[in-house]
Every structure is written in C-alpha cells, then in structure tokens.
Image (tube, rainbow, N blue to C red):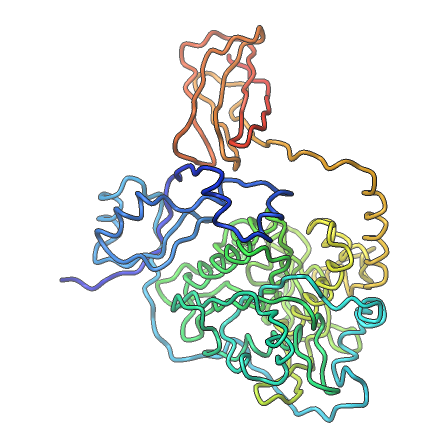
Length: 519
C-alpha cells in the first residue's frame, strides 16, 4: 500500500437545510446576532453525502463550511481523487515537512520592576490610545463582549494567577485545539498565553489587561513545528467556531506568506485582499459581523512586507510603534499589491508589557503584542456601543486616529484616540434612536447582462427559487435548486429577445428582482 497524502479539498455545492436544522448549528447568543445579519450559503455545513463518499477512500480530519472544504488524508493521488469524485472543485496538497518545534514569536523579555499603579507597567501602553482615561475610567472593561483568541497554544492559562479571575468568573466560554480536535488547549506554544495576557490578565497591582472583564474563547489553530497551508485552514475553522458561539471580536496575532517546501507560498502579488486562504476566512467573518484585529507582521521596513490576512480590507491590521510614537523597526509595511494602505492602525509593540507563564510582568517586541492591545480597546468600545456594527466601529477607529488626515503605509491611520472614537459612536447611537430596524435586503447579481443564451445568478443567499418573468407578469422559466451554490447558471436558449425580470426568493421569504436584457 502507498503512503497517505494529506490535502485540502474544495467541494462543489451544499445541501439545503431546514431553518430549524440550520439554527441548531449556532448558540443562542449567535442566533441573536444572526437575526441582524441573516443566514447564508456560508452557514450551511459541508454536504453529508460528499463526506460519506470521501470516507470510503481516506480519513476526514476537519471540515470547513465557510470554504466548503475538507482536510483529508488518502492513499489516492490528486488525479485519482478528481477522477473518482466529480464533486471536487480543486485540491491543495499539504503534506507536512517536519522541522522541529519553533516558537511563533521570539521575545526579549525582562522582569518588571512594577510601580504603584493598579496597572503596573501596562499603564502607558494602554493610555497611548486613551483606553484607561476614556474607557476603563468610565466603567468600560469589556464586560459582556466575547473575544476569541486564535493562536498556537495556551499553556498555564488554566492555572496562572493572572487568569484566575477569568476562570473563577466562568468567562472562558469555549476552547478548541484544531490540530488534535480536542477541547484541551492549555499546552503547546506559549505564544497564545502571553498574547492573551495583554487583553485579559489581572495581576494584583502589577498588571491589568486591555479588556480584563470580557468573555473569552481560546482556539489553537497554529502549529509551531511547521508552516503549512493547513494552518490557514485551521484559522478559518477557528473563525467559524467563533461565529457559531456569537463572538464579537477575533484577535489574530498570526500571519501567513512563506510556507515550507511543497506548500503554496504567496508572492507580494497575492497580498491583494482576496487570494490567500486566510483572507477568504476573515472576509467572510466580517460579513458575519465579527471585528477582526490582526497583526501586520514582523518583516521590517520596505514596501509590501505585510503578511496575510493583514491584506484584507475587512480587518483592523495592527502595526507596532515605540513609546515615543515612532515606528518599531520590525513592524511590517504596506501597501497591499492592489494599492490599499496598510497597516490600518498602530499601537505599542516594542517593549510591550505582558505576563509570562511564571506570573511575572515582562516585556517583549512584536506586532503580536500590539494586536491584543488594539483588540482590548475595541472590546471596550463594543461594550459601550453594542448596537454599532463591525463596519461602523472599525471606520470610527480609523477616522479618529492621529494620522487620519494623511494615512500612509508605515503608520496607517495612526494611533487611535478612544475618546474621539467613543464620541463618534455615541453620535451614531443617537441617530439610530427612533429609526426602525431595516429588513435585510436580498442581494444578488446577474452576468452577463445583456445576454444571448445563458446567465449566471451569483448570490450567497440560501435560495428557494429563481424565476424569469416577462414584463406582463408571466413566468417563463423557474428553478428551485436542491443543492446550494454561490452561483446558478440558467439556460435562456429559445427565449425571445426582450426585457425580463429575474426574480430571486430566499429561503426565509425575502424577494428581490433585477432587469435582464435578452439579445
């Protein structure tokens, strides 16, 4: 027998679920959020019939509903798989090349001497964004906000004194290790623990995190002993799970660009906000209303040194600065390959204080530390303005940073000012009062239009029917798809030339129409 190969396999289409079957996939908290955004194609799970067929030829390791893809091990090669299963769209080979355990971040750490403040040495790194004076001092500490931290491991987080309040209050809502498929995450690389301390830790008078009273989920998505595309896949699994429990914010101190031999590495041209596996996940996450805070990377100066998913338009990409507000030398720069400014914002990342596994306050360097600082600030703002969308909050953060009038690819929009952000969001709150809640519109597109023989209807909605209607109201063609896709091809051969309406009805009864010209 041959050696097994490991793949990410992308599939064609999904099976439709009933509304009760679909809502059962999400927590009560998440269902409330879905009432604002609705359910769509990405919420549907991978087809059970596809999974059953694949199991006959190998082992299913993980499945992603957002990517409509599976992590799969089989003795069959790529050609054999494609020939065997007509529902396969494309395949990425992810066979591992072991290289020994590596840290995801190197820190130069020195023990804190502390001070008399309840924040200890964390005071200055929080106050550079006015997080203390404008948020904490007003009772905003992240209470009621759910933050998911996606990282490489969380050893000692289940026993450290710095997280004692978090544990005792029952604010660890969910955990999962996507490599081992187990709920136990308190092992492996310490990167996740120290990153989490920047947001969540409380250590007597020696340290206080940026959102110390928030609820948390801890997801182990990164694998320290190699750099493979499967880590991007795991990242998306983490985002999906965060969505399923109703997370408000995801903090990602990870980045992807260069991978081990035999993996799909990315060029600068791929830093365009749409190409990488990771960026596809964060773009969907924003559609779901989740705020994503992600590290710019530590590749240093030079145009386009950023890593993905920082290149996504849908994230707050966080760069690192020193305490004098100048750029940290290691902090990656934009622009994206399609010319957009990155990073979005900056905060302290050089000499940033965190809590080590020995419950001692220390400092280290990296955009990995700047990211949770930004996450915590945003969590406090979300607490104050729970009805403001991820779009509104991220726009307010950019608009009220110190370089907003002249953003660049070193500092982005600059250092956020929490007071100003809070004021802008409060104004939006007051405008929203008295405005009736808008019904979510059904969105779809048609191409080509005008057309001769075929059209493609593209939508992420869960579709009940697509109809072609004459202007006199007569229906001339209709389909009710059993299998869900993000596009549907409709044959118009034989239909007379003229103007028609394409009417799309979603599974929850919403209807929308667009004009179509048949040539």
